[in-house]
Image (tube, rainbow, N blue to C red; front, side, top):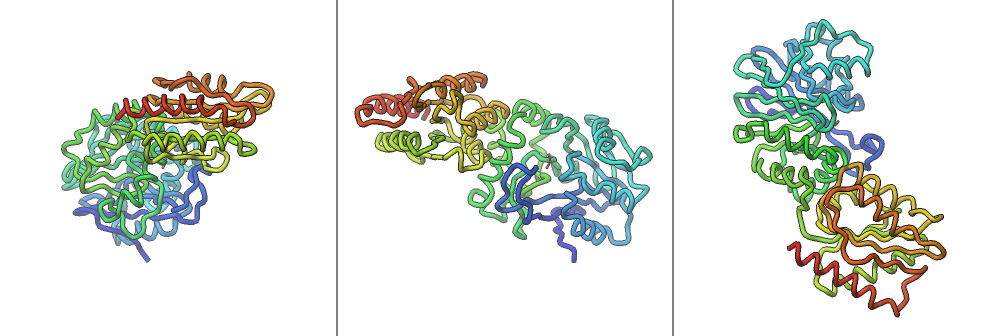
Length: 403
Ligand code: FEO
């Protein structure tokens, strides 16, 4: 049976969910699954905007044919040529051999790289500002390179001001029947997953997100239709404001994320003692993670949210404990910037962790080190309480200065 929603006059959501998938891109855990959104416009001409992952092909094809009814498909717009959205292009072209496939030059380059079907006779190449009129509705195309792939484009339906935004404004998490953000308790059910999606998938490309948002006629947008997660039709400014912060690496909130690596519990103990002192000094909402236990995408997400980070790691084989090194390399690869960071190291016979953590952080822009790193020998001793107090005071002062 079809599972679809009418989202505006002549415009339908025809996507679906995958709740069985374990990891997005085989990397990021999906405890609540993921939604693949696709959209269909029925006007004098019919237009499909993107397809879905091959995992939900049957539902998608049933939705598409049910909404089209007896009609054929005239256009397929490919806003993003990544397999979680283009997994059904070949199927659609085989079903509707005369369909015009709309994309940019790169879209078709990538299509050829992924697939064997020759769609050169179907291809309609568009560039920035091009339009297609399909009856009452006109579609305008805006290139959005590197948000987060080079071929990405956004399509704006001009009559209603509907922005089809590819992966931008997307989220992890399947729909629960509801598909609009205003039909959910968004802050409870989707905000953390929207941030985790942004930070880990799009986070590296903040300047490109800024560039495209500045070029779009945002004042005329009444609905944002991303390829994952909820659709925005009310309080659009809410998600635009989040994107303004996330894409400029501006913390959403003053707060401290404490991330430790600990082999036998001694570094964890030192971090817990520090956290206790921060709480005593009045810092609320402390967020602590064991880097060996929590998937880095969740840690990265909180690092994107908060202003301060404390990292604690033992030296391991005269190197940095591998999961901590991996986290730092991921932060650098995602272009994290503009955070205040304190360091805590631990070693038994050779100290390297503090130096290596400083070095990796030094590759990121606008990282401000707080106080002097505390480097302990195997375990924190009571006589080191003063040193811990000094570090806790420095973090507290930095936190207060940031408020
Ligand atoms: Fe949802 Fe970049 O693919």
